[in-house]
Image (cartoon, rainbow, N blue to C red):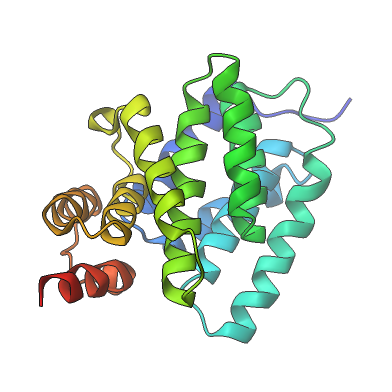
Amino acid sequence: MRERPTTEWKEKIGAEIARYTHRGDYRRALPVARAALKRYPREAFCRFQYAKILGDWADELPPARKKKLKREAIAILKPLLRSLAGEQPKTRFGICLNYYYQREDFPGMVRFGRRLAARGDRQGHYAVGIGGGLEALRRKQSGKARATGWARTSLAAWKRYDLSREKYYFPHYIEAAAHAVLDRRAEGLRSLRRAARASGRTIRDWEFADVLSILNAKGD
């Protein structure tokens, strides 16, 4: 029988990774995830954490490098979708959510979230909020139709989820994006400031630049 990590070990690794990711520092989180994967290479939790951090860090990189690492992350996550039984609910949710995110299948993420929400799972609203906001932002930036509808979907989900309890910066950033698409400058800036505070950065950080640009354009 292969050695399995204890629940306490996984909680410790998860907390160590979160110490970086909650600040948006995926580059420094990656060695922690890589070391965990090296110790338990067949463990779904470790494979998921590594794929998630790898794919999230890729968002900071030039297009060719980003595409390569995203593919690597997806290749790790996809087989895990077939072996979710026995994993903790948080890990199961994370694997599914990140599979949609790394593939940039944001409408798929919303459908996934709605299925969870229909079963009374609060995390379903989180998935709808993230997916709806990202699709709204993508459509806004590319000039495609129906961006505002996706933004409203996102904001409705965040209202149900209750972001006042959320410590991770990214959902607050996504809420800001949805407000920006709907031309709600004051609300968007409040959400963006919450994202900045949660991550120990300012609203002028590079990661927030796309949303801040839309919000500032609305204020001209």
